[in-house]
Image (cartoon, rainbow, N blue to C red; front, side, top):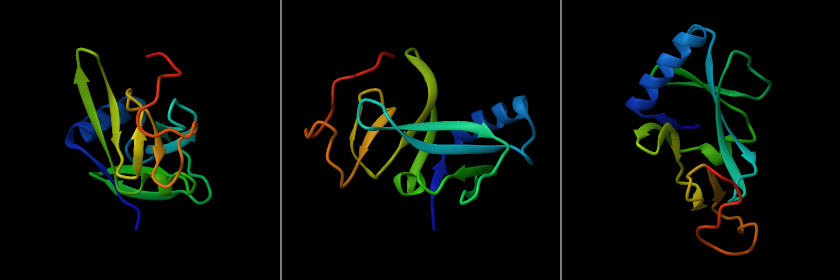
Length: 129
């Protein structure tokens, strides 16, 4: 069974965002993985009100979460937090399936796959923050 955890901070912020953009009954948090980023893959999250064939839907702390079948293997067992600091604020994914992450925390290389350039560990940023 697929598992993704939401921290108290993430849940609180998501409830606030959902209240601004719709209702909890018809709004989902879509969490996904896409190609790109300086480590090969990047995380994405968006509020969504549509389901697609094959989507996995479940509840986390009362929030309806949706994950597409291609992203599910990369996200299983992950947790999502919301952090605020002087450097900025935003959602952060902690993923036990990674062997390498970018310094920005927004991109990763999954375990069992070689880094795009054949090296291990952190890579230089190919993007700006």
